[in-house]
Length: 363
Ligand SMILES: Cc1cc2nc3c(=O)[nH]c(=O)nc-3n(C[C@H](O)[C@H](O)[C@H](O)COP(=O)(O)OP(=O)(O)OC[C@H]3O[C@@H](n4cnc5c(N)ncnc54)[C@H](O)[C@@H]3O)c2cc1C
Ligand SMILES: NC(=O)c1ccc[n+]([C@@H]2O[C@H](COP(=O)([O-])OP(=O)(O)OC[C@H]3O[C@@H](n4cnc5c(N)ncnc54)[C@H](OP(=O)(O)O)[C@@H]3O)[C@@H](O)[C@H]2O)c1
Image 1 (tube, rainbow, N blue to C red):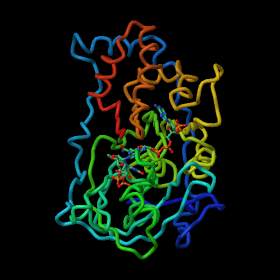
Image 2 (image 1 turned 90 degrees about the horizontal axis):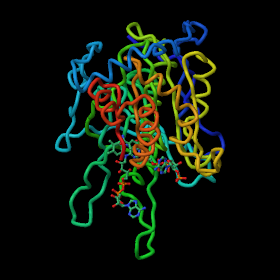
Image 3 (image 1 turned 180 degrees about the vertical axis):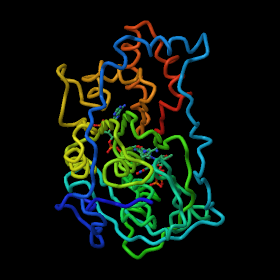
């Protein structure tokens, strides 16, 4: 059994909104007792013990803690609904969560599932937009990462939420083109039907270990699965899961007016300062000491040594979601850090991936 413990889905008040009333408080926050034990420690790797284990990975059997592969995790449902038998839910709420002066629009939306779409944190759903394509055929589905935890924004396991950027671009002929599904979704009004498939995906399932270090690297709407993780960690109460590890979120966005779910994350930080670290990279407003654009990897580079130490622990899990370009940028900083200790980053990354500790869903 799980219960939601937060008061409201918070969005910038200045933005346009077509929403139902915010959720009610199901459990008073004062009844939550989060144990605030500092879990981040450099000691874990001070001896270099874990590094040597990893360094052996390519030559000997690694002395690693056995973990259940996410691919075999029990009870994770995939493809319950397919394009031929989709699920039709209703839009309950659709709110623009970027400010009016942000470059582009991102919307947070909640759909009814009546408990029929049993998803886990880190999964995605497909959406089939209404209408037909230029060949007169129904539109194909598009995938969207789920932005709510498994119990949903209303805490009743009967909804699913998405975080969608409206795609608008200018083509080679100078015409403005609107992406089919993102515009369909961002324009949805409460009460409208939404055709869904899924749930799908196991790559981004969150670690079961409540004492894990979870490093989340998101650009733009790549924040979606991390909002889902973080709600479970900090806004909910579960009999079988009480997060007491370290969650560290890096979020890259173009401007401060496009920072997604900032107020929610700040609330989490207030609640659990020892268990949550939050770093933003605002690319068009911030630079590093060399005057370079502040991308997510630029911000991470400020904590390079700390991140490297964390990466040596067996219970550190890294998740990356968003723009494809970020993966190379992050690899670049890791290559030099690993090289300092004579480790080949790509080899090391492979061992992390195999152990389910390096998880990437970029697009
Ligand atoms: C696993 C997964 C999860 C995803 N999660 C999310 C999510 O949480 N939120 C989210 O917003 N999106 C997410 N996406 C992206 C989403 O699936 C759609 O691709 C996106 O919304 C665009 O779809 P559309 O129908 O609006 O655009 P379409 O009508 O499909 O148009 C997209 C096409 O337009 C063209 N195009 C796009 N930009 C340009 C440009 N600048 N110049 C020229 N041509 C261009 C390209 O050919 C592109 O394929 C995810 C994708 C994947 C694979
Ligand atoms: N599961 C998934 O696979 C998944 C889930 C959600 C979203 N997505 C995808 O993620 C993307 C997010 O786009 P968005 O429009 O929402 O984001 P956005 O608001 O434009 O923000 C993206 C941020 O990343 C920066 N950036 C650009 N190139 C980068 C690089 N090489 N390395 C690091 N950072 C870089 C951008 O900086 P500048 O613009 O200033 O250069 C901007 O600050 C979309 O393509 C979406 O489809 C994928």
